Length: 443
Image (cartoon, rainbow, N blue to C red):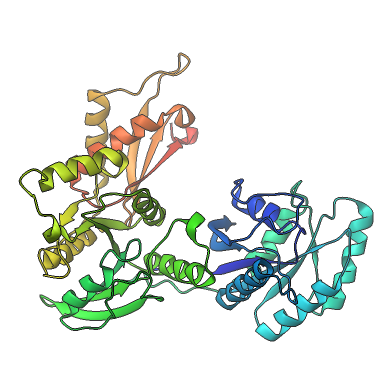
Protein backbone atom coordinates (compact mmCIF):
# COMPACT_ATOMS: atom_id res chain seq x y z
CA UNK A 1 0.00 0.00 0.00
CA UNK A 2 1.09 3.56 -0.55
CA UNK A 3 0.90 6.07 2.26
CA UNK A 4 -0.21 9.32 0.67
CA UNK A 5 1.74 12.38 1.80
CA UNK A 6 -0.06 15.17 3.65
CA UNK A 7 0.05 18.76 2.35
CA UNK A 8 -1.21 21.38 4.82
CA UNK A 9 -2.31 24.91 3.89
CA UNK A 10 -1.70 27.50 6.62
CA UNK A 11 -1.53 31.29 6.85
CA UNK A 12 -3.01 34.25 8.63
CA UNK A 13 -6.74 34.98 8.15
CA UNK A 14 -8.14 36.20 4.83
CA UNK A 15 -5.20 35.39 2.57
CA UNK A 16 -7.18 32.94 0.40
CA UNK A 17 -6.35 29.55 1.92
CA UNK A 18 -9.82 28.10 1.31
CA UNK A 19 -9.90 29.45 -2.25
CA UNK A 20 -6.59 27.68 -2.87
CA UNK A 21 -7.94 24.48 -1.27
CA UNK A 22 -11.02 24.53 -3.53
CA UNK A 23 -8.89 25.24 -6.60
CA UNK A 24 -6.55 22.30 -5.96
CA UNK A 25 -9.28 19.73 -5.27
CA UNK A 26 -11.44 21.15 -8.09
CA UNK A 27 -14.49 21.41 -5.83
CA UNK A 28 -16.12 24.17 -3.79
CA UNK A 29 -15.69 22.31 -0.51
CA UNK A 30 -14.38 25.07 1.74
CA UNK A 31 -16.48 28.13 2.61
CA UNK A 32 -14.97 31.27 1.10
CA UNK A 33 -15.78 34.70 2.57
CA UNK A 34 -14.08 38.05 2.95
CA UNK A 35 -14.66 37.94 6.69
CA UNK A 36 -11.48 36.75 8.44
CA UNK A 37 -11.66 33.43 10.25
CA UNK A 38 -14.56 31.84 8.38
CA UNK A 39 -12.70 28.51 8.26
CA UNK A 40 -12.84 27.37 11.89
CA UNK A 41 -12.15 23.67 11.40
CA UNK A 42 -9.77 21.85 9.19
CA UNK A 43 -11.02 20.43 5.93
CA UNK A 44 -9.22 17.62 4.15
CA UNK A 45 -9.53 15.88 0.83
CA UNK A 46 -7.52 13.76 -1.57
CA UNK A 47 -5.95 15.67 -4.43
CA UNK A 48 -3.73 14.77 -7.36
CA UNK A 49 -1.44 16.39 -9.88
CA UNK A 50 0.61 14.79 -12.64
CA UNK A 51 -0.21 11.32 -11.32
CA UNK A 52 0.83 12.08 -7.72
CA UNK A 53 -1.88 11.79 -5.08
CA UNK A 54 -1.77 13.48 -1.69
CA UNK A 55 -4.01 14.51 1.21
CA UNK A 56 -4.70 18.24 1.23
CA UNK A 57 -5.61 19.95 4.51
CA UNK A 58 -7.13 23.43 4.83
CA UNK A 59 -6.80 25.17 8.20
CA UNK A 60 -8.35 28.16 9.84
CA UNK A 61 -6.46 31.45 9.97
CA UNK A 62 -3.24 31.11 11.97
CA UNK A 63 -3.16 33.87 14.64
CA UNK A 64 -0.09 33.11 16.80
CA UNK A 65 -0.47 35.60 19.66
CA UNK A 66 -4.24 35.85 19.98
CA UNK A 67 -5.76 34.95 23.34
CA UNK A 68 -9.30 34.77 21.94
CA UNK A 69 -10.67 31.25 22.49
CA UNK A 70 -11.63 30.63 18.84
CA UNK A 71 -8.35 32.06 17.57
CA UNK A 72 -6.41 29.99 20.09
CA UNK A 73 -8.16 26.82 18.93
CA UNK A 74 -7.51 27.70 15.29
CA UNK A 75 -3.83 28.23 16.11
CA UNK A 76 -3.65 24.87 17.88
CA UNK A 77 -5.34 23.18 14.93
CA UNK A 78 -2.79 24.62 12.54
CA UNK A 79 0.09 23.56 14.78
CA UNK A 80 -1.20 19.99 14.96
CA UNK A 81 -1.68 19.99 11.19
CA UNK A 82 1.94 21.08 10.75
CA UNK A 83 3.04 18.17 12.96
CA UNK A 84 1.24 15.78 10.61
CA UNK A 85 2.40 17.50 7.42
CA UNK A 86 4.88 16.22 4.88
CA UNK A 87 4.75 19.62 3.16
CA UNK A 88 3.36 23.02 4.24
CA UNK A 89 1.90 25.63 1.88
CA UNK A 90 2.34 28.95 3.68
CA UNK A 91 -0.15 31.30 2.01
CA UNK A 92 0.46 35.04 2.05
CA UNK A 93 -1.18 38.06 0.40
CA UNK A 94 0.87 39.59 -2.43
CA UNK A 95 -1.24 42.75 -2.36
CA UNK A 96 -0.57 43.41 1.32
CA UNK A 97 3.00 42.16 1.53
CA UNK A 98 4.68 40.71 4.60
CA UNK A 99 3.13 41.45 7.98
CA UNK A 100 4.20 40.84 11.55
CA UNK A 101 1.86 37.81 11.60
CA UNK A 102 3.53 36.40 8.50
CA UNK A 103 6.93 36.75 10.12
CA UNK A 104 5.71 35.11 13.34
CA UNK A 105 4.28 32.17 11.38
CA UNK A 106 7.52 31.90 9.40
CA UNK A 107 9.53 31.62 12.64
CA UNK A 108 7.30 28.76 13.81
CA UNK A 109 7.65 27.00 10.47
CA UNK A 110 11.44 27.31 10.57
CA UNK A 111 11.42 25.61 13.97
CA UNK A 112 9.16 22.80 12.68
CA UNK A 113 11.79 21.58 10.17
CA UNK A 114 8.99 20.82 7.71
CA UNK A 115 9.42 21.49 3.97
CA UNK A 116 7.61 24.74 3.17
CA UNK A 117 6.47 26.51 0.00
CA UNK A 118 5.65 30.20 0.40
CA UNK A 119 2.59 30.95 -1.74
CA UNK A 120 2.12 34.62 -2.65
CA UNK A 121 -1.62 34.62 -3.38
CA UNK A 122 -3.72 37.36 -5.01
CA UNK A 123 -0.94 38.13 -7.49
CA UNK A 124 -3.50 38.98 -10.15
CA UNK A 125 -1.66 41.91 -11.75
CA UNK A 126 1.89 42.74 -12.77
CA UNK A 127 2.54 44.97 -9.76
CA UNK A 128 1.54 42.38 -7.17
CA UNK A 129 3.57 39.73 -9.01
CA UNK A 130 6.67 41.89 -8.76
CA UNK A 131 5.92 42.56 -5.10
CA UNK A 132 5.83 38.80 -4.39
CA UNK A 133 9.63 38.79 -4.25
CA UNK A 134 9.46 40.54 -0.86
CA UNK A 135 8.48 37.22 0.73
CA UNK A 136 12.07 36.05 0.31
CA UNK A 137 12.75 37.88 3.58
CA UNK A 138 10.75 35.23 5.47
CA UNK A 139 13.70 32.88 5.02
CA UNK A 140 11.63 29.99 3.64
CA UNK A 141 12.86 29.95 0.07
CA UNK A 142 11.54 31.22 -3.23
CA UNK A 143 7.88 32.30 -3.16
CA UNK A 144 5.48 31.12 -5.85
CA UNK A 145 3.08 33.84 -7.01
CA UNK A 146 -0.47 32.72 -7.84
CA UNK A 147 -4.05 33.94 -7.99
CA UNK A 148 -6.13 31.10 -6.58
CA UNK A 149 -9.43 32.76 -7.45
CA UNK A 150 -8.62 32.84 -11.19
CA UNK A 151 -6.25 29.88 -11.34
CA UNK A 152 -3.25 31.96 -12.42
CA UNK A 153 0.02 29.99 -12.13
CA UNK A 154 -1.65 27.08 -10.34
CA UNK A 155 0.05 24.57 -12.61
CA UNK A 156 3.48 25.92 -11.72
CA UNK A 157 2.64 25.83 -8.01
CA UNK A 158 1.46 22.22 -8.17
CA UNK A 159 4.57 21.24 -10.13
CA UNK A 160 6.62 22.60 -7.22
CA UNK A 161 4.36 20.79 -4.73
CA UNK A 162 4.75 17.35 -6.31
CA UNK A 163 8.46 17.99 -6.73
CA UNK A 164 8.81 18.44 -2.96
CA UNK A 165 6.59 15.53 -1.92
CA UNK A 166 8.48 12.67 -0.28
CA UNK A 167 8.91 9.55 -2.33
CA UNK A 168 6.58 6.90 -0.91
CA UNK A 169 7.56 3.30 -1.11
CA UNK A 170 4.87 0.93 -2.25
CA UNK A 171 4.31 -2.22 -0.25
CA UNK A 172 1.96 -3.79 -2.76
CA UNK A 173 4.06 -6.94 -2.86
CA UNK A 174 2.42 -9.89 -1.19
CA UNK A 175 3.92 -10.27 2.27
CA UNK A 176 1.39 -12.91 3.28
CA UNK A 177 -0.02 -10.64 5.99
CA UNK A 178 -3.62 -9.47 5.71
CA UNK A 179 -4.10 -5.94 7.04
CA UNK A 180 -7.59 -5.32 8.44
CA UNK A 181 -8.71 -1.90 9.65
CA UNK A 182 -11.62 -1.81 12.10
CA UNK A 183 -13.45 1.50 11.73
CA UNK A 184 -16.71 3.09 12.78
CA UNK A 185 -18.10 5.95 14.77
CA UNK A 186 -17.02 6.17 18.42
CA UNK A 187 -18.15 3.58 20.95
CA UNK A 188 -19.48 0.91 18.58
CA UNK A 189 -17.14 -1.75 19.95
CA UNK A 190 -14.07 -1.65 17.72
CA UNK A 191 -11.58 -2.26 20.52
CA UNK A 192 -13.75 -5.06 21.94
CA UNK A 193 -13.56 -6.87 18.61
CA UNK A 194 -9.79 -6.45 18.47
CA UNK A 195 -9.51 -7.73 22.04
CA UNK A 196 -11.50 -10.85 21.24
CA UNK A 197 -9.60 -11.60 18.05
CA UNK A 198 -6.27 -11.16 19.83
CA UNK A 199 -7.33 -13.21 22.82
CA UNK A 200 -6.06 -10.65 25.29
CA UNK A 201 -6.81 -7.16 26.51
CA UNK A 202 -4.61 -5.19 24.15
CA UNK A 203 -6.88 -2.13 24.00
CA UNK A 204 -8.62 -0.20 26.76
CA UNK A 205 -12.35 -0.86 26.46
CA UNK A 206 -14.68 1.64 28.09
CA UNK A 207 -18.06 3.19 27.36
CA UNK A 208 -16.47 6.62 26.91
CA UNK A 209 -16.36 7.63 23.23
CA UNK A 210 -12.90 8.41 21.95
CA UNK A 211 -10.80 6.22 24.26
CA UNK A 212 -8.72 5.06 21.31
CA UNK A 213 -6.96 8.24 20.21
CA UNK A 214 -4.62 6.64 17.70
CA UNK A 215 -4.51 3.68 15.38
CA UNK A 216 -2.91 0.67 17.02
CA UNK A 217 -1.66 -2.41 15.14
CA UNK A 218 -1.89 -5.90 16.58
CA UNK A 219 -0.44 -8.92 14.79
CA UNK A 220 -2.08 -12.31 15.16
CA UNK A 221 -1.87 -15.72 13.49
CA UNK A 222 -5.14 -17.47 12.72
CA UNK A 223 -5.35 -20.83 10.96
CA UNK A 224 -1.74 -20.46 9.82
CA UNK A 225 -2.13 -16.99 8.31
CA UNK A 226 -0.76 -13.71 9.62
CA UNK A 227 -3.13 -10.82 10.20
CA UNK A 228 -2.52 -7.25 11.29
CA UNK A 229 -5.61 -5.87 13.00
CA UNK A 230 -5.67 -2.07 13.02
CA UNK A 231 -7.86 -0.63 15.77
CA UNK A 232 -8.70 2.96 14.96
CA UNK A 233 -10.18 5.98 16.65
CA UNK A 234 -13.82 6.61 15.90
CA UNK A 235 -14.44 8.21 12.52
CA UNK A 236 -16.77 11.17 12.66
CA UNK A 237 -18.44 13.17 9.94
CA UNK A 238 -16.13 15.91 8.75
CA UNK A 239 -18.60 18.58 9.85
CA UNK A 240 -18.46 17.16 13.37
CA UNK A 241 -14.69 17.13 13.68
CA UNK A 242 -14.38 20.14 15.95
CA UNK A 243 -11.81 19.31 18.59
CA UNK A 244 -8.16 19.46 17.66
CA UNK A 245 -7.60 15.90 18.82
CA UNK A 246 -10.62 14.75 16.80
CA UNK A 247 -9.13 15.94 13.55
CA UNK A 248 -5.77 14.46 14.37
CA UNK A 249 -7.23 11.02 15.06
CA UNK A 250 -9.56 11.15 12.04
CA UNK A 251 -6.65 11.81 9.72
CA UNK A 252 -4.73 8.95 11.34
CA UNK A 253 -7.77 6.69 10.88
CA UNK A 254 -8.01 7.53 7.19
CA UNK A 255 -4.33 6.70 6.85
CA UNK A 256 -4.99 3.35 8.51
CA UNK A 257 -7.77 2.64 6.00
CA UNK A 258 -5.35 3.62 3.26
CA UNK A 259 -2.80 0.96 4.25
CA UNK A 260 -5.33 -1.79 4.91
CA UNK A 261 -6.39 -4.62 2.61
CA UNK A 262 -9.92 -5.04 3.98
CA UNK A 263 -11.98 -2.77 6.23
CA UNK A 264 -14.55 -3.81 8.83
CA UNK A 265 -17.11 -1.02 9.23
CA UNK A 266 -18.81 -1.52 12.58
CA UNK A 267 -22.27 -0.23 13.44
CA UNK A 268 -24.35 -0.70 16.57
CA UNK A 269 -27.41 -2.97 16.40
CA UNK A 270 -29.58 -0.94 18.76
CA UNK A 271 -28.89 2.34 16.97
CA UNK A 272 -29.23 0.91 13.48
CA UNK A 273 -27.62 2.54 10.48
CA UNK A 274 -27.12 6.22 11.24
CA UNK A 275 -26.24 8.97 8.81
CA UNK A 276 -22.82 9.10 10.42
CA UNK A 277 -22.32 5.39 9.62
CA UNK A 278 -23.10 6.10 5.97
CA UNK A 279 -20.50 8.88 6.04
CA UNK A 280 -17.96 6.39 7.35
CA UNK A 281 -18.85 3.96 4.56
CA UNK A 282 -18.40 6.70 1.98
CA UNK A 283 -14.98 7.55 3.36
CA UNK A 284 -13.94 3.89 3.22
CA UNK A 285 -15.32 3.48 -0.30
CA UNK A 286 -13.22 6.42 -1.51
CA UNK A 287 -10.15 4.26 -0.83
CA UNK A 288 -11.56 1.33 -2.88
CA UNK A 289 -11.04 -1.23 -0.14
CA UNK A 290 -12.70 -4.59 0.38
CA UNK A 291 -15.42 -4.01 2.97
CA UNK A 292 -17.50 -5.86 5.58
CA UNK A 293 -20.33 -4.31 7.59
CA UNK A 294 -20.33 -5.74 11.11
CA UNK A 295 -23.52 -5.18 13.12
CA UNK A 296 -22.15 -5.32 16.65
CA UNK A 297 -23.99 -5.92 19.98
CA UNK A 298 -26.56 -8.11 18.24
CA UNK A 299 -26.76 -10.13 21.47
CA UNK A 300 -28.40 -7.13 23.16
CA UNK A 301 -31.38 -7.11 20.80
CA UNK A 302 -34.08 -8.66 22.98
CA UNK A 303 -36.97 -9.46 20.65
CA UNK A 304 -35.31 -11.22 17.75
CA UNK A 305 -38.54 -12.91 16.69
CA UNK A 306 -40.02 -9.63 15.48
CA UNK A 307 -36.69 -7.94 14.76
CA UNK A 308 -34.90 -10.64 12.81
CA UNK A 309 -31.49 -10.29 11.22
CA UNK A 310 -33.17 -10.63 7.83
CA UNK A 311 -35.53 -7.73 8.55
CA UNK A 312 -32.69 -5.63 9.94
CA UNK A 313 -30.58 -6.30 6.86
CA UNK A 314 -33.46 -5.41 4.53
CA UNK A 315 -33.93 -2.06 6.27
CA UNK A 316 -30.22 -1.40 6.23
CA UNK A 317 -29.79 -2.21 2.55
CA UNK A 318 -32.77 -0.03 1.65
CA UNK A 319 -30.81 2.92 3.07
CA UNK A 320 -27.61 2.12 1.16
CA UNK A 321 -28.59 0.50 -2.16
CA UNK A 322 -25.23 1.34 -3.74
CA UNK A 323 -23.51 -0.87 -1.14
CA UNK A 324 -25.47 -4.01 -2.01
CA UNK A 325 -22.18 -5.80 -2.71
CA UNK A 326 -20.97 -5.39 0.89
CA UNK A 327 -21.67 -8.45 3.10
CA UNK A 328 -23.28 -7.92 6.51
CA UNK A 329 -22.35 -9.92 9.62
CA UNK A 330 -24.38 -9.89 12.86
CA UNK A 331 -22.02 -10.33 15.76
CA UNK A 332 -21.12 -9.57 19.35
CA UNK A 333 -17.56 -8.49 20.04
CA UNK A 334 -18.16 -8.89 23.77
CA UNK A 335 -19.26 -12.55 23.66
CA UNK A 336 -17.32 -13.41 20.49
CA UNK A 337 -20.46 -14.44 18.60
CA UNK A 338 -19.50 -14.63 14.89
CA UNK A 339 -16.38 -12.56 15.50
CA UNK A 340 -14.15 -15.24 14.04
CA UNK A 341 -16.53 -15.52 11.07
CA UNK A 342 -15.88 -11.85 10.42
CA UNK A 343 -12.14 -12.54 10.27
CA UNK A 344 -12.66 -15.44 7.86
CA UNK A 345 -14.90 -13.29 5.68
CA UNK A 346 -12.17 -10.64 5.44
CA UNK A 347 -9.75 -13.30 4.21
CA UNK A 348 -12.25 -14.42 1.56
CA UNK A 349 -12.78 -10.84 0.38
CA UNK A 350 -9.03 -10.33 0.11
CA UNK A 351 -8.79 -13.39 -2.14
CA UNK A 352 -11.63 -12.08 -4.31
CA UNK A 353 -10.07 -8.67 -4.81
CA UNK A 354 -6.89 -10.34 -6.10
CA UNK A 355 -8.71 -12.34 -8.78
CA UNK A 356 -7.66 -11.88 -12.41
CA UNK A 357 -10.07 -12.75 -15.17
CA UNK A 358 -8.61 -13.86 -18.49
CA UNK A 359 -9.29 -11.61 -21.45
CA UNK A 360 -11.20 -14.32 -23.39
CA UNK A 361 -13.48 -14.96 -20.38
CA UNK A 362 -14.00 -11.25 -19.91
CA UNK A 363 -14.93 -10.67 -23.52
CA UNK A 364 -17.35 -13.60 -23.54
CA UNK A 365 -18.91 -12.04 -20.46
CA UNK A 366 -19.15 -8.61 -22.12
CA UNK A 367 -20.71 -10.04 -25.25
CA UNK A 368 -23.30 -11.89 -23.18
CA UNK A 369 -24.35 -8.97 -20.92
CA UNK A 370 -24.60 -6.56 -23.86
CA UNK A 371 -26.70 -9.07 -25.83
CA UNK A 372 -29.08 -9.33 -22.87
CA UNK A 373 -29.38 -5.57 -22.42
CA UNK A 374 -28.06 -3.10 -24.96
CA UNK A 375 -27.05 0.39 -23.83
CA UNK A 376 -29.59 3.04 -24.76
CA UNK A 377 -28.94 5.11 -27.87
CA UNK A 378 -28.23 8.74 -27.06
CA UNK A 379 -29.24 11.47 -29.52
CA UNK A 380 -29.58 8.84 -32.20
CA UNK A 381 -26.07 7.49 -31.63
CA UNK A 382 -25.73 3.77 -30.86
CA UNK A 383 -23.05 2.57 -28.47
CA UNK A 384 -20.97 -0.37 -29.61
CA UNK A 385 -18.58 -2.29 -27.36
CA UNK A 386 -15.43 -3.77 -28.88
CA UNK A 387 -13.61 -5.58 -26.09
CA UNK A 388 -12.63 -5.45 -22.42
CA UNK A 389 -9.52 -6.17 -20.43
CA UNK A 390 -8.53 -6.27 -16.77
CA UNK A 391 -6.00 -3.59 -15.92
CA UNK A 392 -5.36 -4.39 -12.25
CA UNK A 393 -6.39 -5.89 -8.93
CA UNK A 394 -7.09 -4.52 -5.44
CA UNK A 395 -9.48 -3.21 -6.60
CA UNK A 396 -10.25 -5.26 -9.71
CA UNK A 397 -10.04 -2.70 -12.50
CA UNK A 398 -11.58 -3.26 -15.92
CA UNK A 399 -11.23 -1.21 -19.08
CA UNK A 400 -14.10 -1.28 -21.59
CA UNK A 401 -13.50 -0.07 -25.14
CA UNK A 402 -16.41 1.33 -27.10
CA UNK A 403 -17.20 3.87 -29.83
CA UNK A 404 -18.98 6.48 -27.69
CA UNK A 405 -17.56 6.39 -24.13
CA UNK A 406 -18.88 9.85 -23.22
CA UNK A 407 -22.45 8.81 -23.99
CA UNK A 408 -22.43 5.72 -21.80
CA UNK A 409 -24.84 6.25 -18.90
CA UNK A 410 -23.90 5.64 -15.29
CA UNK A 411 -26.82 3.24 -14.78
CA UNK A 412 -25.56 1.03 -17.60
CA UNK A 413 -22.11 0.89 -16.03
CA UNK A 414 -23.81 -0.09 -12.78
CA UNK A 415 -25.54 -2.89 -14.68
CA UNK A 416 -22.19 -4.18 -15.98
CA UNK A 417 -20.68 -3.91 -12.49
CA UNK A 418 -23.53 -5.93 -10.97
CA UNK A 419 -23.18 -8.56 -13.65
CA UNK A 420 -19.45 -8.80 -13.00
CA UNK A 421 -20.15 -9.44 -9.34
CA UNK A 422 -22.75 -12.08 -10.11
CA UNK A 423 -20.61 -13.84 -12.71
CA UNK A 424 -17.23 -13.76 -10.97
CA UNK A 425 -18.12 -13.55 -7.26
CA UNK A 426 -16.86 -10.13 -6.21
CA UNK A 427 -18.85 -9.92 -2.97
CA UNK A 428 -17.39 -7.31 -0.65
CA UNK A 429 -15.03 -6.02 -3.34
CA UNK A 430 -15.20 -2.59 -4.97
CA UNK A 431 -14.90 -2.66 -8.75
CA UNK A 432 -13.42 0.08 -10.88
CA UNK A 433 -14.68 0.44 -14.46
CA UNK A 434 -12.94 2.63 -17.00
CA UNK A 435 -14.41 3.31 -20.42
CA UNK A 436 -12.19 4.31 -23.32
CA UNK A 437 -12.64 4.94 -26.99
CA UNK A 438 -11.06 2.33 -29.22
CA UNK A 439 -7.97 3.56 -31.02
CA UNK A 440 -9.10 4.07 -34.60
CA UNK A 441 -5.69 2.92 -35.80
CA UNK A 442 -6.60 -0.54 -34.51
CA UNK A 443 -9.66 -0.74 -36.72
